[in-house]
Length: 628
Image: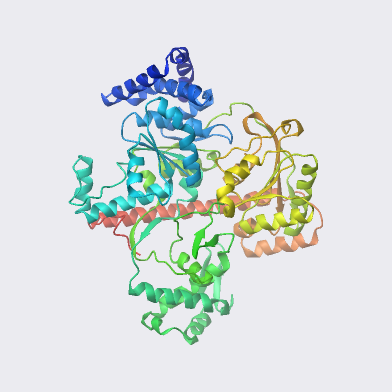
């Protein structure tokens, strides 16, 4: 941190010199830095001058002068760190510093964020700053034609989503293979030699520098789900589709503890002897005759698991006849992602939509693997310190907390624990109405789409008209969030809560206490709770928050298993008001769930590395020659 702070007075000392330049001279100075880098001067030595130029361009073109803490943050990102900056501290502007510095090398600098809207918004917002310094800006969007993508990657700075950049990497590898020997083509590309005989060219020009926005969400929460480009299904997939449909149809007939055992810690289903006999007795489609019994048992176990664990409007939605995952950590739709190990197909069968296959993969890569391929990686988020160990171990980056520009004056109100969900929801509504009567804006965070809509209905019954923000309303997300700080506004949101968009307080709201945030449940990761709390008290604004919990909350079941959760639920049924002394019970459960998820991610990374090692030894491409 001391090293990053040491740059601030040096950058500030250059301000008078930069302010004296006219626009032409400012751009010329920037081109001079570019020439010096390409003449062999290390970019570390140019950091102070580069940051001073960016600060002046921001002041001049955006009327936004980088704060000292943003200069510190930019320096930390450049030195391979993920920085933790509180909500509203200006991460979008901070990003321009390391991106500009990396772009001077002429190999492109990428910024990955969580959705297309934020990628476009941030790129367009910052373009005047980059243009003033002679830098071009590209934007990658879903459904974008290949020539436009290539043009965007050829720009000095490119904004996009991690998913789109990952799919582009895979498509490029498939293209290189189709044009000849993939390995030779990759070496040819490195040497500047055109690929084999095809007219098509890869869209990316190498993985040089990556800045990950909302780094905790992308590098940790999304890391477990691989990006997959599927090939056309063959005969085996048609048989599998029948088996998935059949299993989804008959799975409700299987009874727990009679036909199968369910392990709550490992979340696995195992058929008993009686369950296997029952499978053999059931009528099956003729297409399944070719399947061994052991495989049929697996289809049934998967269907039971999906029926127990995967819920419509919580874990996924159905859109245009397709299953779209709702990311449990961001509350947003996770476009282009699929669950592993047949889970996605089992959900498709459960919902009666067309079954798609990742078993016949053309190419795949995990988010972890994609970002580890970049020469340099940095990131920024509002909540990373709780995942410091994991980020350092997997991505070899430091995690630094950047101080706020102004002291935060956010106030925590007493946490209230209730016996049942119904009591808790009633108390949440009462708290929201109390603050609404004072004309304060209220933001209520929920864990899923169904809960956000249930709570909204309860508020309507009490005469309050809330605005709902969940994965169904992503197109209006920024507009909803921007208005959430107005007097008297009540916003009910899933944990997306407009990540990446500031809630600005309306006129007169500061004087009546600022934004009030209500947290209705603990999430599976403490970081997500902190993201929600961080919506109030931005940039020295006042704000309050309160946590509501209930003894039948899902976190207790996930953390302690069914027996202890059932005892706590029974205890809750006896109580009528708030229960004291139970808060730590919830936080311990949350820590247990976090540890389990961390273990799962470590196992995934280990298996991916082992698989790739074996495939390289066999002379295969680990991204294209992927087993089902």
